[in-house]
Image (cartoon, rainbow, N blue to C red):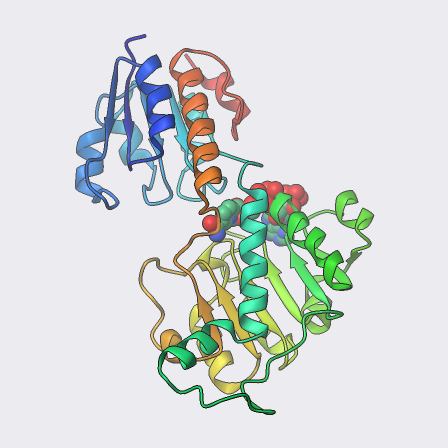
Length: 326
Ligand code: NAP
């Protein structure tokens, strides 16, 4: 097949190998960083297929300069960086990588639950700084996890997998989502309107996709509803939380702490955030295990190969694209 495709960042070799075997030209961003907008616009021109990341905004400007695009394969399950409606109107399918990263991302939510409640990162800094002078009865006391209430916002794949892990810690689970979830109810989770969930939970874990409705879903009002002993865990997308309000809430003790894998303006940090001891921050590594990144790469490559071959891609987020393909 003579397809000419662009991959906007180095992904696992196995996945590039799949593309090499199936496509005529496979160009991979040579830099160990995201492309600048200018580099990306230059590189995407005239392509048949695109495999891209959250760091590339896919909008009308991109679609105008690459009218031959037969498909866009995201190397992620979230695709808030893609103007999906614009792609659909042009008859272009868009795919993502669901399921293969669900458990890995739920694990990182749990890493943050423990890291915040049991002051893991703060303790590590304390020891490294040579400040550990021996066991102390009141030294660096944290909060229990076992038996506390876990609140899940967004009861999809990752929200449900995060809830499933709570069984090991005898935690009551409450959830809120757009619709009732049978899978959550089978886990014994209780549906609550969001405000009630915020009032009742000891850990609030966010798992909604980033959309216009979920932007700043958690702001000053919501943080104020949370218990002063509660923790906010965000492994979904930064803009779901109003970070300015979060810094204020953490500073004033409106909540006990926050665990963040994602940030509002990545990789920039909200001023004041890194001065706070009661926040644990990770560099957006929710899906970051070797095995998961290979699974994501192979899935994205298989999706792209299907699209440039004129076949239905397995993980399409806009099946309506076909009605518009001329
Ligand atoms: P999913 O299965 O689609 O789950 C999303 C859930 O959110 C669905 O249950 C959905 O309800 C619910 N939802 C959507 N809009 C809502 C709203 N306005 N209010 C309340 N609930 C709403 O997606 P997933 O696979 O679990 O992934 C979730 C997100 O995790 C992704 O979009 C991505 O942003 C993020 N993520 C982050 C990392 C990381 O590295 N940190 C890794 C993977 C994923 P319906 O079912 O009714 O639509």
